[in-house]
Image (cartoon, rainbow, N blue to C red):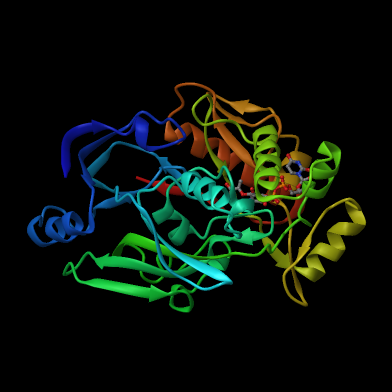
Length: 338
Ligand code: EPU
């Protein structure tokens, strides 16, 4: 266990916002999580849990305790000829787990290559990319209750997964600390190649379809669109893709014939926020030290030394112009703190 007072959170948020926490606590094992919750009553209710900090926007210094569950370890817990169950510590870097799965010839996680963040957050946020979501792989999520330090295991269906959401972000927000996530991966291929330009990139490279090649293609696509947070602070997609009534979409389509959509149900469609923001002319524009990424309008960037408030101000302007032009409300995928 590591406890630091008045600690910089620069290394704990990929936006690179320079704020401080009154206390930062690193917990390295399930035992430490339980012990800490049993013995440390200090501001228990207001404790903030961070993982890789890739989905957070700090608006101010955090006056309470920031907790990081840094449990490591990747362990095979059961397998058949078809599948393999892998239990992973919440503090493992997500992409290290994907690389490990690919290296072992286990299928399922490869489309989620190069997503920043940690394993614990993958289960809270239901991370997703290129036609796959974490929920498609998760078997169960082990947690410790903040109230009484008791352990509990949520099966996949109990997690109430939805687009970038789960019970841990919804009705049980703030109640549990994730310690381990068990993923069920496949021993035979289940390819998801129809999203975006995956097929085109594989064809262009003229390389056979293998786990390694697919991972390399996904990394190439992401690299081209998403800035490296080590160089330019960002949190990936800043906004969620809004779901709108098909009626509204059909009316807008008359005015904007190239407006893309993904069907969600009979009467609702998802519209790419990146497209909406781009059409409002925001790509590459900035407001103070906060900018809209030049290659992908869905990504807001820290141009250097921006405060969380500056990023939030830009986000407000962007959302307002999307509302004015299209009558569609877009909401942040990023969690605001403070
Ligand atoms: N588009 C534009 N201009 C832009 C950006 C996008 O016209 O500046 C258009 C594209 O041409 C395309 C559509 O909008 O027709 C969708 O764009 P893109 O594929 O780039 O983004 P997305 O599909 O909306 C989602 C996730 C990403 C994930 C990709 C790939 C959300 C909010 N974002 O983006 O997730 O990597 O799909 O599956 O769901 C993240 O959550 O941090 C993230 C990066």
